[in-house]
Image (cartoon, rainbow, N blue to C red; front, side, top):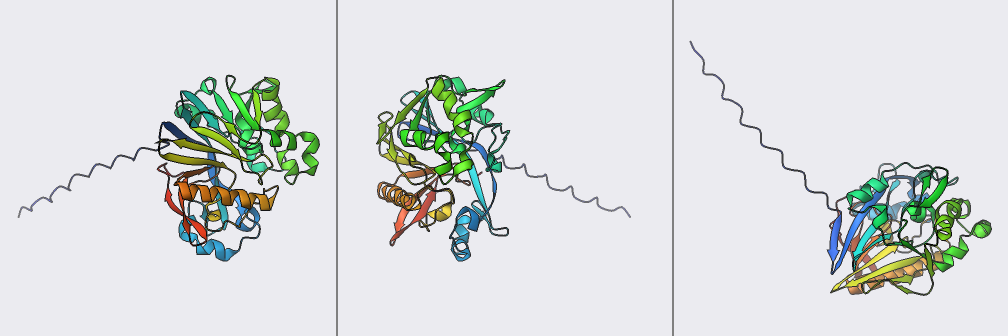
Length: 321
């Protein structure tokens, strides 16, 4: 007796196209592009990266932190190292330059002898090194000045040969090699002056500033000491939009609901807390986007007051790392 052949399986549904990766947004007349050097689990547990933090503080904020900012299973923190490309008034401005390739950092193995495709990522953002007009180093730690230079044969040469490099004068003086033994970070910043600062000074590309500095009608630099003596932030005001490029005023999202926590890298812990509190208050009161240098996930956030403290009220539209 003939059997009825089985019905053919329904046609497979076409896979939904992958969502486009968002790296760029616009605030007023200013375009901001996120350029990642790397983003991964840090080798530091919470008690090492944030001395004095309590396990309960991390558990209390687990919904905010896990998995983008903290791995609850291993207690390891997550960090990104990133730059911000800012296009303003016809110029290409690069805020912080990461850790760089091929640089020896004896006490910072996470940043020692890296080999990343940072310049490729910069090119994917539509920027060739020769097109950068201005480099802003928010401070002079090794992971914020690394791509100031690149290796050419045996010499370190400016990566961005047509740019002016803006550096805070207090840090230019503080991190000079003759002062290194008296700093808290000490050998963590060893070799930085020689391979990432002196070559651009010698090339005549560095302009130092102190107190405050106006970049253009949309952007200005303001001091935010504590993490280092010269730590600074970049304020953006364009149209009705505002943002703060926060450098290392915070290293992790936990420092929003728990602002008393400092990282292990602060030169002056009390001053770091004070600068962070001022920045939070400004951002909350002016609806300003906060763009730190090391935040993974969406990379930037908006903040609002909650009681006597603060909380993250929304994330930037950048794709998660």
